[in-house]
Amino acid sequence: MTLNTNNKFHIDLNVHSFGKQRLPNTEKKPTDLQRPDFSKPYQILNSQFTYNFKKIELYAGVENILNFRQNQPLISWQDPFGNYFDSSSVWGPTRGREIYGGIRFKIVGK
Image (cartoon, rainbow, N blue to C red; front, top):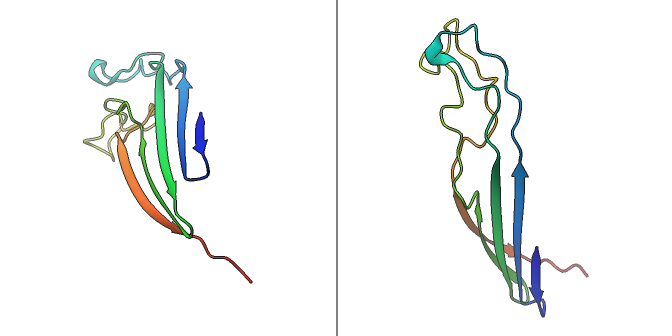
């Protein structure tokens, strides 16, 4: 969804929806390292606001507004060189909400 009024400001909102995903089989690992067969469904929301001056744009945004994170994405992360270390079960975001801002300068050629 985008909202733009008189080219002065611009607002974007993006929604990404992910359904459940089949995960690698972990039944041969010790019980405490086993994972479910499917991931949870989740949504990611991102938004950005931009304000336009003549030659400068100011912008600010938020990614992963709902702060969704996958719990313990790596199996046996404490022992990365061990027999059970496994990164194949990463199915969702590993970082939470991120806030950013910036300035864009418009350069007009001759």
